[in-house]
Length: 386
Image (cartoon, rainbow, N blue to C red):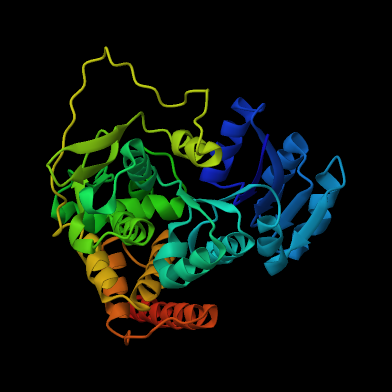
């Protein structure tokens, strides 16, 4: 039995991870759950899986949590919850959304546990710091994002040496606005942005996908995970979302990972690695006629992707600033403070105030993150006043 801790258990990835564990109950045991504020769902999950540790970030929910539980686990709140969950089990799934997931990533790596990483912001905002902690502890990161899982599987399939790899090719669905005219983007609603054509995700990730910023963050994440230069990481739009990414080798051949668009496959791969699940979630009917379409991304309509490349190459704390500015801009759009087309302009304007900074500690990361959020919030307020 593999003992699993899940941070962000009530979110999209967390709930799907519990689906995987339920379907493979002879392979996995849930020993810890961590959530933000969805107490009702956390109580339901805890009573079903009965982990010995439950974490919730806000202590005001503890009485409600205790009242709903049918047993007596250890309950921890605040920063202690992030550290505590990393101490339990053999695998920690970090499915916390946004920058808030960084403490879970660092605590898990420091503890020497395997990290199943669905929180790309950890590597975007603090990649160099994460790399130092990872190298010191020897911890292993198995990516959960479908694109990075696909690359991990392709590289694993032949145990290839680094000098054989020519390019990493990340695929993107193109999001809900791939076929929209430029003029129509002026009137995008939140409901439009959340209507992803192939994936079921939370609000923040869905909006990021609609701007292609999600793919930009994944480019930075891929560079951190696989140590490949940005000039050798490409993005292609693949609307069918069946080819989840590819690795091209120096002789021109490529290995692709292909499956249905179901996040439970990469989740299960990360939890069971180096083995594979016996239960299939995303197998395709190969007798069905299919068309696989590939096209370049439209950088004019989706400038966030090009911006992410620039920021990644700039290095230092620039990705930290980008991530923080984007989180504020996306939240402002969700709260109807800015329009969809203003998300990119807000992020770009925020980055203009960034000055090159080296990250040597978690305190440096937190300071840059705080400053970027303050700057971006001010830009949002100024837009609201115009």
